[in-house]
Every structure is written in C-alpha cells, then in structure tokens.
Amino acid sequence: MLAIIFVCLMILIALFVLLKGADYLVDGSADLARFLRVSPIVVGLTIMAFGTSLPEFIISFFSALNGQSDIAIGNIVGSNIANLALIVGIGAIVAKNIKVRSTSLMYEMPFLVVSSFLLLILADDFFIFGKDTLTLSRFDGMVLLLVFVIFMSYIFSSIKEQRKTVTKEFSIEFKNKNPLWKNILFVVGGLAALIAGGRIFTLYAGQLADLAGLSGSFIGLTIAALGTSLPELAATITALWKKQGDIALGNIVGSNIFNILFVLGITSMIRPITIDSIILSVDAIVMIFISLVFLVFATKDTNINWTEGTSLLMMYVIYIIFVFWRM
Image (tube, rainbow, N blue to C red; front, side, top):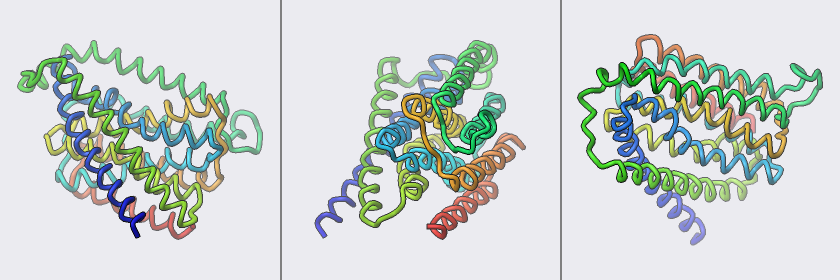
C-alpha cells in the first residue's frame, strides 16, 4: 500500500514539474522569437520541439541499448499518434479554435508526412534490400539523419526570409517582456524541468506496467508514449492558454519530425532496432493516417476548430481501445 502511495505521489510531482517547466518554456520561447524577429512557430519547430522530444529520445535510446526494441519503436510511434490525435484534439477542444497566423506551418507540414512514410519504407528491408526482415539498420539511421539535416537546413534558411515579413505579422508582440539572458534561462530551465518530469513519470508508470505483466510493445505504445508526450501536452496547453497557437502547433509538428528523424536516426545508428510486424503493419499505418488527417485539418483554413479536435480525440480513443483489445 505504501509503495502504491509513493508511486502516485511521484507521478503527481512529475506532473507539477512538467506544468511549471512548460510555463517557463513557453514564456521564454515566445519572447525569444520576438527578440530574433522570427515567427513563434519557428521557435516551436526547433527549440521547443527538440526539448519536448528529449524524453522520447531518452526512453527509446536506453530501451534499444537494453534490447527492448518493442518499447523503443513503440514509444516513438505511440507518442506521435498521441501528439497529433490526443494533444491537438484536447488543445482544440479547450481552445475551441487553434489559429495559426504564420504561413510557415504550411511549408514544414510535408516533412511531417514524409518522415512518417520514410519510417514505414526504411523499416521494411524488402523495399531496399529485398530481405524479409523488419529492422531499422545503421544505414536506415543515416538516411533518417540526412533528411533531418535537410529539414533543419530548411528551417534555418527560412528564418532569413521570414525576417522580411514576420515583423509586420507580429509587430504588436515585438515588445520584449524580459531581457535576453532571462529568456534563455527560462528556455533552458523549462526544458530541464520537462525532461525531468517526463522521465520521472515514465519511470514509475513503467514500474506499474512491469508489475502487471504487460508486453514491451504495449508499454511503448501506451504508458511510455503517454509519459513522454506529457511535455508536449503541457507545452501545448500552456501555449494555447497564452494565445500562442503558432508555438503550440509548431511544437507538435516539430516534435513528431524530431521523434522519427532524429531520435530513431541516432538510436538505430548506435544499435539497429528490430520492429514487431504488428507495430509496422498497424500502428505505423495509424500514425500515417492521423498525420494526413491532421494535415488536412490544419491547412484547410489555417486553423483546427472544436469539431476537428473532437474528431482527432475520438480517433485516439478508438485506437487505444484497439491496443488494449489486442493485448
């Protein structure tokens, strides 16, 4: 009984740390965007996306090293599904309408879909090597990292172009609230809190799952995915609360791209990942489908409304029910 109380207490502490970290991160990132004279969505796609993807990297990296490939790949696929369906869905319902003022998102969106399809193609060795195996090899990791470098190069090159138009788009917000050193401190401290909170939550949630005798893929797709998606959820809700829809969606899109291209790229470069056929043939397809639905919703009229958010959330609920059913 005491052990259960202790675990619940640690989970509550982790949630508090996540929320405070997200609060500081959003404030620092928004003000940093003002200082750099770039669209807030660029900050969401880079600084925040990298920071909120670190928990996924930690879990997937150490799971792969320990030979728990199902958790490593399940964590990424499950997290990406949760980011787009659960988090964006909840965000759109809470905010009633997620409005994106910058046109940057439209140009970054293709990388989200391409990275999802790329994972499916590279994981099945038949497409490239003609082998009947499902792995992410070191070669696959190199390809993922190469595409990641291209993505980052595009982002940084777009910063120069955006300086010409973004001042007009966000002119009323270019009055900095804090000095530069304080914004950097907020960003670094917020990222540290998000990483620590996500790690603590996942650690204790994973212990409960192990005691219940759940499979590695189930833990990866649900417990680990939800735990490592908490930073994105906290950052997104906080950003929407502060009327920063650009940062909110930029963080989600960037985080999903980072998860596949950077996290799986680095992880498979260090140790090849064997993939369960069910994850590849079912869960990865679900991830691609939800990515395409999100793309349609976000680009149709540059906002995601309450109805679309509800649709995304219902997709996630149905998916989770299916995952529990196939246990």
